Length: 70
Figure 1 (spheres, rainbow, N blue to C red):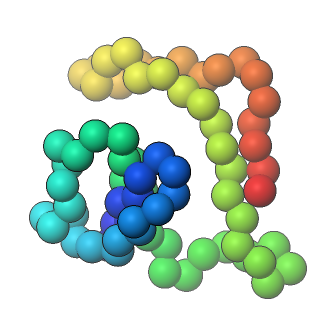
Figure 2 (cartoon, rainbow, N blue to C red; figure 1 turned 135 degrees about the vertical axis):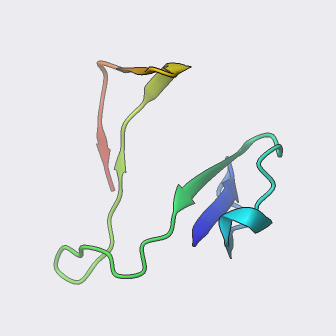
């Protein structure tokens, strides 16, 4: 299962990959983790900014600024 949501975190849907609109602009898709790792019983996420410049071979660059832990 995957989650597709708009950039403003509205309109969240949990769907199979075949049911997602991969052409929709201003959204992102992430894998849904049904049994996540918890810290003190709470979910968390880590935000890292990257730029993907090539898919084959995969080439990405991590922004040297902040890494977000929420």
